[in-house]
Each structure stands twice: as C-alpha cells, then as structure tokens.
Image (tube, rainbow, N blue to C red; front, side, top):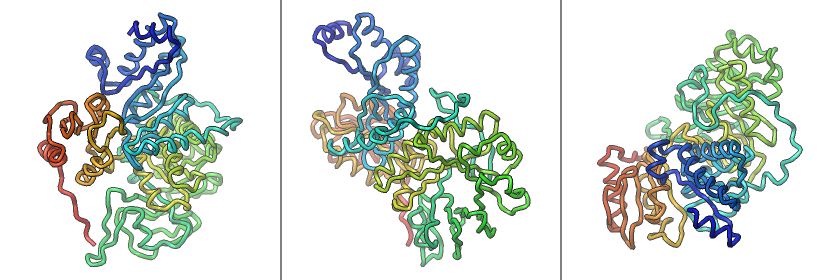
Length: 496
C-alpha cells in the first residue's frame, strides 16, 4: 500500500479508502469478526499508513448492504478518528441497496441517519436501475439540508443508548405494543368517512363469497379514525384509534388524548380501553407529566414533532424517557410536509430510520393525506424492514450495473423477485460479477452471482454451492437451492 500512497502524493491525486463489510481480511476477521469494529480497524490501518507519509488527500467509505451495520460502522469510524486526531471526509452509501422502493428506503435510512447526525461529505445512492435514476434520489436526500440553519436548540439529555451497537429500548407491554412485540403500524384515515374499500390500502381485502377479511403481510395494526365512526365489522386484528372526545368504546377501539391537557385526562382506570394513546411533543415531557405516565399501566405515547431536525428531536424525547426510567411504549408520528411521493418516502425513512436503528420506537404512524394510503403503508413497512425491526417481505441485495456485469441485472432481479417475493425474511443477493459480488452480499442467505458470460454461481451464505450454472437454468436452480435448505414455502393464492 505504501508505494500507492507515495505515488498519489507525488502526483497530487486523491484516494478513496473503502472497507467492505463482506471482504475483510482473515486476520481482521479472526480478531474482530465480520463486524463494524472489524471494518473500522481495517480502514484505520490504511489511514495510519497515509498519515505516516504525510498524505491526507483521502476520503473514506464503509460499504455494507445492511443500513444498521453501515450506520454503526461510520459512527465508530468517526469516533476512532477523533481519538487519533483525524478528520478525513466521509463518502456515504448503502451498497447494493436494490431497486424500486426498497432501494430508496434502505438508502434513506442509512444515508439520511448519518446526515441527520452531521456526518457525511459526499453521497452515492446505489440502485439496481438505470444509472441516471440514482442522482435524483441522492439530490432529494441532501436538498433538505440546504436551508437548515439557525434551528431551535434541542435540549441536551444524557445519551441512553450505544450508538455503535443495537439494543432495543426496554418497555413495558401494553396490549400488543412494546416489550417483545414488533413495532406496530398506524394509518390515518380520518380525512373522510371510513368504508371497507379504504382498508384495501392498509393490507386488508374483503372476500364477499367467503364473507371474511383476508390480510396480507402489510396489514397495518391500527387505523386512526379521528372523529369518524366505523359502522361495519372490522378485521379481528385491526384496532381503531379515535379522538377522546369522540370515543364511544367498543372492542378494539382506543382513545387518543392530547398531552397539553393531560391533567384533565380522567383516570384511565375508569375508562374502558386496553390502550390509552397520548399524543405528546417534546415540551410536554415535564417531570410532573412523566411521573403521571409512569403511574399508568395502559398508556402508549405518540411522539410527534414539528422541529426541522425531526430525527434528533424524536431521539431526544426517547432519551428523556430513559433519563427518568420511564418504560412507556412509544409510537413515532411523522407527517412529512411534502406531497411528491418519492420525496415523502425518503424524508419519512430519514426521520424514522435513525431512532429505530438506535433501538427506539414501538410503532410508526405516517400522516399525509396528499400521499396515497397504499404508498404510506408500503413506506411504513419498508422502513421497519430496512431497520430490521419488523420483517414482512423478501429482501434483495442487488448491485447497480457496471462494465463488469455479466447479465441484465434489472431483468434478472425482476425474474428472481417474481418467484421469490413471498419468502418473508429470506435475503437474496443478486450480483453482476465475481469481483465485488461475494463480498458485498455478506448479509445474504442466498447468492446469485455472474461468473462468466451466460454462467452463474449460486451461494448459500458465503459458501459456493453450484458453479457455472447456465443462465437460462439459474433461476430455477436458485429456487431448488432455497428448497433444499428448508427456506422455501409455496406461494399462497389469495381468495376473492
């Protein structure tokens, strides 16, 4: 490495040092494992050599397809650089993020969280799409920071979590929220009368011949009705949240109180409801209010904020709860002030992704009636999937096209998605070549990697299972490999 450093120094050239989550040396793996710490130590070794030769035209990247690993690695890198007096710029990106909605949400969760933390100097959005599709997404992620200055201060609170590793915040259980339960999804249907047809966008389908509701893997857990009432039989798993003033009781109906008048809220023990939701902003979290919350066993706080730095505000609210050992479950409420669907999706993923990666949050509630309900629903579940807090679908780790790609990535990804999209929780890597593929799909359960013209190699995790499979047979061979290892289930044909 030293000759390269000296050559770049003599020529006045810059260098990017990139550490790949799946391509660490055996020496690093033996000491640190395939972890953020291993990634950081690998990069620091090269940085120390650069510094020994007084060469500082360096940019650093931490490459991982898992936003959680990526965020932890960058944070840890900055911490180590600070300790050694280094301040090299950071190039941010979630590698092999995939295509479509999934690729955009994963990129926003990873890149957006770090930008909100004040980290990052350049960004790259890596999508399995035409190259020109990447730049608009990157621009939307960074444009919201152009006017972000002179903001209201967020009061400092003691750090209550480890920013370099994941541990979910300890909360008590209130019905199906908090403790061991996956985060819930809430949707706002309060802008017009609630009908069975409106639930279609929330993951529910009514079968007239069978006279029953069918729900898919993206069925939300609660709807917010506001002052509206529901005059038809709901799916048995769906809860309804109503404004306290309009609350009429009923099975799986729950009141929503406003925290600014919390002292006027009657004792929740005297009101028949398993959950009492209380909507709060940061200014409501006074000692008196929180002591009252701690004394109630059926409260769930809905944390909302109008602060431009929403991610930090929501996180600070959670740390305020931790400061006084208040284990009440919390649902994050966000209403991005944009109407263009893709921008809405990116902003929501940025604002909610960070706190979820840090272990906070027992639910998400996305408002914004200008954005179609189905879009909001898929965004909410996509954010939970990207943060690994609630798995509801297959995950694809696929690279962007480059000159080394040995097959049509977009077409192949679509073929694989068509036959595997029902395999909830399975992670499939789709890589165009052998150069970076095996390393960059470190997080995948199965791998489909181009190894020559018309030839595919199939992996189970990092182990090669079949080499040189003809491309025409490779998708079927991948399905058979998944079947052999017990992860295949037959797709369910929905009833109508």
